Length: 95
Image 1 (cartoon, rainbow, N blue to C red):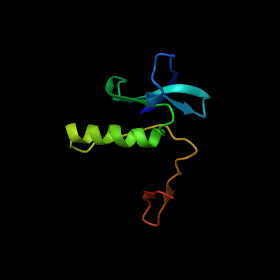
Image 2: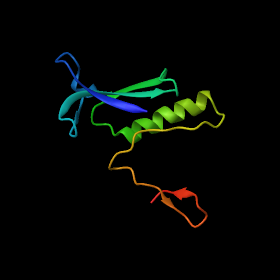
Image 3: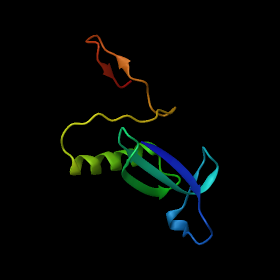
Image 4: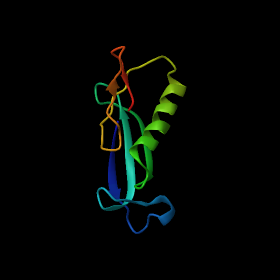
């Protein structure tokens, strides 16, 4: 999973644009979900002010609806995602 902010043209309505404060971009954001070979699985276009974690929730829900069998997922981490801490059982849990 990854995302990319893209400047919105003047013809893009303000209702579908947002401001990505991290990249100082007023426009839209493309959220991509790819398989292990880099092939596109799903795509979601949102206003740029939508957080990656919120878009990931939508993409993973859609993925699970089409493919209910368990699958491993990986994504890029950022400062707003807590680092999992090991528990006494040796498994990781969110902080």
